[in-house]
Every structure is written in C-alpha cells, then in structure tokens.
Length: 134
Image 1 (cartoon, rainbow, N blue to C red):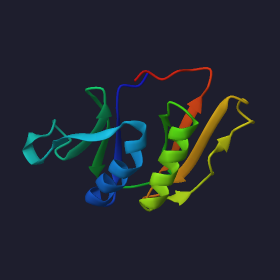
Image 2: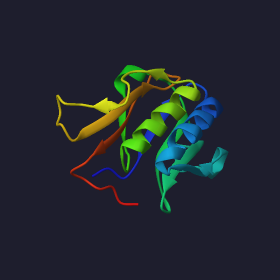
Image 3: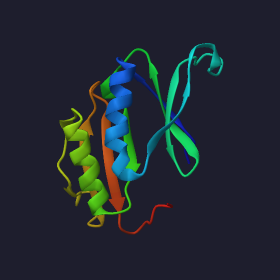
Image 4: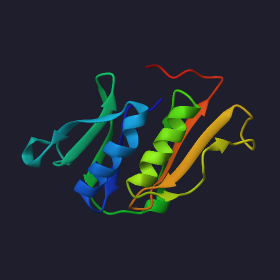
C-alpha cells in the first residue's frame, strides 16, 4: 500500500490550480504546503493534497517526464469518475480515455483517463467490487 507520492511538475502554480479543480469531485483538496526552508530535507517546496486529514499527493517543481508517470485515483462511484474527468478537462487536461467500463480489466471496472498539463497520465477509477473509505 502506498502512503504518498511526489510528482514533479514544470509550473507549480499551474499544477496546483489544475489538481485543486480536478481532484475536488473525489473529495481530495489542496491542504498543506511546505515553502522554502520549511520543507523536509531535500524537498523544500511541496504542495500537498489529501482527504480525511491525510496528505498523500504532493507536487513539486522539477524535471518532468510525463510518460513515466501514471496515477490512479479512487472514485466512490461512476458519478465521481465522470465529475473528475469533466473537471480535469475544464481545467486543461487532454482526454486519454472517456469515462466508461474498462472491460479488458473487468466488467466492474469503470474509469476515465486524462493527461495533465505536463503529460502525466491520470486515471479516475471505480471498481464496483471495492468500496473506497470515505
């Protein structure tokens, strides 16, 4: 199980704005920042996103290789998948797979895929055999 992920982005403020809009339908919000010398050693400027009192998704300014990253975010249902996809598209994402069943994985796997402004692959997914904690 993962505890957190750091994602390097080319324009930190643009990405903070993008992810704040994109992750809101999933209940994930921009919650905590480290700036300058206040950040952990080796990570001075971090922008943190999370839910339920836990920050787990961090953005930092740095080198980008969008093709090297794929992040899947859990959605509570099809409506959250659809809403996150719509929010991402409105915030400047490129479509990489419209919302729908992903039958090649499982008939109960419903997802949508986008590319963020740096080309990172994002997936919003609901697996009907699992129920995400909220």
